[in-house]
Image: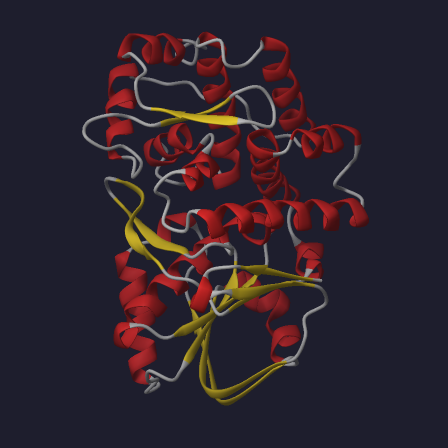
Length: 346
């Protein structure tokens, strides 16, 4: 199956199928990590041909998504004498994809790159849409660029070795898509298990269709695309507070979704029944739904480092019942802190 993101001259295909042969008439560098390379590099190499092929291995983990790793990647590209006609291949999860895309956007002022995501989270979300970047001490993805890949290859074969926790983290992003944009899809998720291969393939396809449509309408997040950050405003603070080590990204998003829902209930946008349905679905996949905030004021101040915040106003992405979403930047500080207090016990 092929889905296209319509971005004019920068449009590209997303292939959802068994990995097809990739023939590149250029130098190619595959950026990956030791875990993915050990499990799947031989499978990938059977399906790639290039003038020259190099492997660049970076450490595994969100804590390595930083400028030092980007410099390491760039040094290896220069060592191997890659040029403007070269192609980078991101072979891994969201961390590898984000860093490879960012490196591609700045190496020699921009070279082509291809996404071959190997985690569920990166297959349904991170590999599509051209957001690239790294973290710094101020927060998540605060340094980066919008830079679209030339193609995305999604093969569920890679998910066979995915740990249960990583799988669940990807499910959080699928649930995010459904709550914000597709009520029917959410109800389908309530009735069907993603442990089933056919169901999983449908959920991946539907999630990509939703994201592709949103990105085509708002590539650089001036409006609609910000809705895809449902749960992320809270999640990014949680990740920063825990030094990106306690939670996987999808796990932090799951908690962020619950927090956003509490705020939506307070503002009478979402019923308690709907919020409980979302929480129940998250729990079905063993996702965390609670995080104890130690310092409410400090947590609140971290919101202002979010990329969506502008003119000293915090943008919150909130569900307006299931299947619809609103973005608000006019919520009183006291109301937000009242919600944060619910996560200040225990």
